Length: 331
Image (cartoon, rainbow, N blue to C red; front, side, top):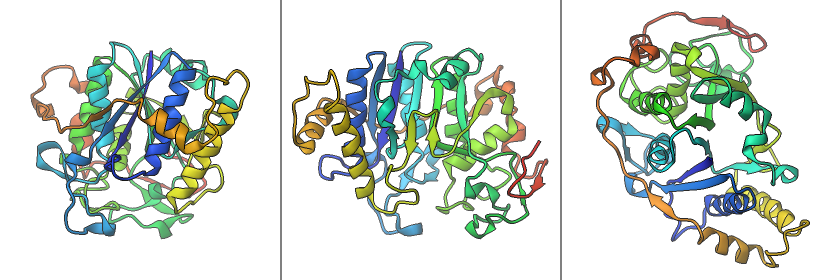
């Protein structure tokens, strides 16, 4: 069994964010494809409204060991929560809310995707996406600099890993890897020794995942993708790359869903109004309230975690450093 895992940090009862529409899209998909379930979480109680902070964020979220975190870290906690609900060896796939199914593959089972099949046969427990074109990966040790795009710079990590999609097998290694990632917010890394360098002024979950991959690449099954994943998903609305408004996502999701409803053998959905369809599908979803978890400090867990090479991962000053241009790749 596979489960799509989603998390929303807004109060969906009072605000129809694009997550409201995306959840309905995945609910429709899980109805059409019976071997894929849906686990949805809301983290709004973890991030109470406060004074506007860095980049205008009002949410002040508290994570592992009291660490202040950006409101994107709950994706890691949501997968850990999903592991408690799913069966042993189930496949969990986390999706950001702006991930959309490509129309022609809407009825395709996740298990029929070649990359997923290869991952399941690899013996690895976690699949991550490498985007060499991802602009943030070209920053330096000091602070994130979008102006570094295209320059010859020193990259501290072998490759930028993105966290808008990842897959984990619900086994012991998968759970340990997710806990390492969650607890990494409280530890320094090469590119972020102070915990304040990247984007938010707080530890960034995407940089921590990249640091983890850099320290222990053999633990991961890595796939290089950009925007279109496995010819199955599209990151962002179909209408445009570089969108700025949630309405672009809503419009694109609406078009995707109505295309399926009007398709062959879809007559059991007779809605003519997209809002009626989305409302019905959304209210079929059981949304769990996400709560913080306190895990044992990793250094106290015991034998077995040497596989993670944690001392190397946490050491902010350790080499190697990768120096290459925008058009080349690290070893």
